[in-house]
Image (cartoon, rainbow, N blue to C red; front, top):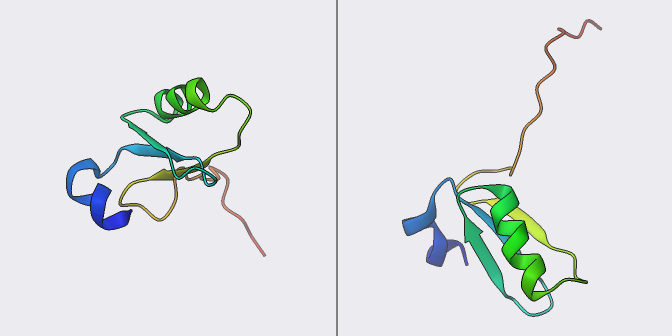
Amino acid sequence: MKTLLEPCCIGKFAAIEPDSGDYFVAERMSAAMHEARLKHPDKKFFLVRIGFKAAVTFKNPIPLSL
């Protein structure tokens, strides 16, 4: 799937339904999930940001001291 989606969709989100292999690509995470849930309302999805290691990142504004 990586070789199929990376050339055209870097930075977009893909919601993947593992059982069927269906996937839904959109500019926004919420749009990809919305399309996925329309077709598979009772399923769980694997969400990725194409070309990135993680779909989302969280940063702590307070420095951690050990």
